[in-house]
Image 1 (tube, rainbow, N blue to C red):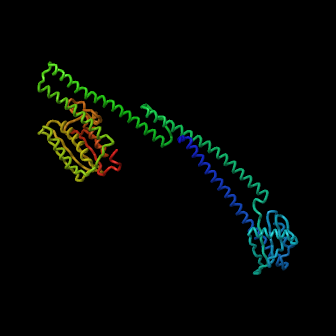
Image 2: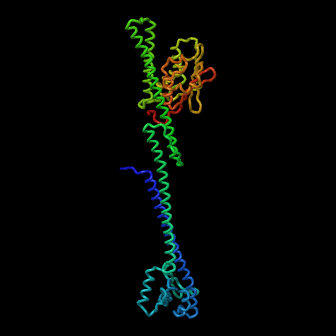
Length: 460
C-alpha cells in the first residue's frame, strides 16, 4: 500500500474535522430553531387558553349557558387563521368549533366529526371551564404551528438560507486555510526529509532551514547534531585507521629491516638487537590485543552482567597487584575508602578498566612520587578517584580518551593508546562517567558509577 503524503493526510484531517464541526453546528442550530418553535407553540397555545377561559366563564355567568353566538362575538377578535378552538358543554357535547380561520356549523355533522377526529388525533386533552367551583364546560384551543403562518415561514426560510450561506462561506474559508496550513507543513517536512536524505547519502554540509514548528525544529536540531557527530566519528575513524596503519607499519618495518640485515649477515644477531626485536613484537602484540579487546567491549553482542561488587576490597586488591608489577619500590600508594556498600557492576569488565587506569597511574607517576586512590559516594553515585604525581598538558586532556593517542611527551609513547578508551567504554557500558583533571602537582582520573542498576537493558 502506497503511503500518503503529509500534505494529503493533514488536509484530509482538517477537512474531516471541518465537516464534523459543520455538521455539529448545523445540527445544533436546527435543533435550537426546532426547540424554539416548539416552545413558541406551547406558550402560544397556553396563552390562548388562558385568554379564552375567562371569556367562556363570563358568557356562562351572563347567559347561564355556553351560547355559541355570544362566544363567537367575544372570540372573533383573537381567532386567526392559524388557531383553533373547540368548546364543549358540561356533558362534553360540542357547542362551538373554530378551525383554520372559519367557524364550523354544528349542523354540518361530517365537518364536526372530522374536527373532533382531528382533535382526538392531536391527543390534546380539553381543560375544564370553571365558574366558581362548578365545571360548566371544556375548552381545547391551540395554534396550528409556527410555520403555518406565511410570514413565519418566510422568516424561517430567510434565517435558514442565511445560515446555510454563512456555513458554506466558512467551509470555503476554512478549506483555503487548511490547504495553506497543509502546504506550509508539507513544505517544512519535505525540507527536513531532504536534509536527512542528504545526510544518509554521505553529505556532511547539510543546513536545515528554520521552521516555526516545534517538533520539526527538534528533528532538525537533532539531525544537525547527528551530522556533526557523524562528521566527528568519520574524522576520528580516519585518524584512527591512519594511526593503526602507522603504529603497525613502524614496528613491522623495523622488524623487517633488522631481520633482513641479520639474515644477510651485515647486522650481527646480538642480544641487544634480539631484545629490541622482541620489544617491537610485544608492542605489535599489545596493540592487536587491545584493538581486539576494544572491539569486543563495544560489540552489541557483549552482555554486561551486573553483580554486587564490594568496591573497596575490589579496588585495593587490584591496586596492590598492579603496584607489584612495577619495579619502583620507592613509589607509595594508598587506598582510602569512605564507602562501605556494594556497586552493581560486571566484575570482569570493571577489573579491566581499573587495571588500565592504575597501570597508567603507576607508569606515569614521577620517580619517588605516589599514587592515591579514594572512593566516595554522593547523590547516588560512587566515585573512584585515581591520582598520581605528575602533570599533563591541560590542552591534551580531551584527546587522551581518543583511540591510539599516547600523548605528546616522549615517555608517553610506550603504550598502545587504547587503555583509556577501553576504560571509558567499560564505564559508559555501566551508565557511568570518566574524566581526567589536573589539580596542582597531581593528575586525577576519576570514574563514577551509579548505585542503582540501569533501567534499560544491559545488552545493547
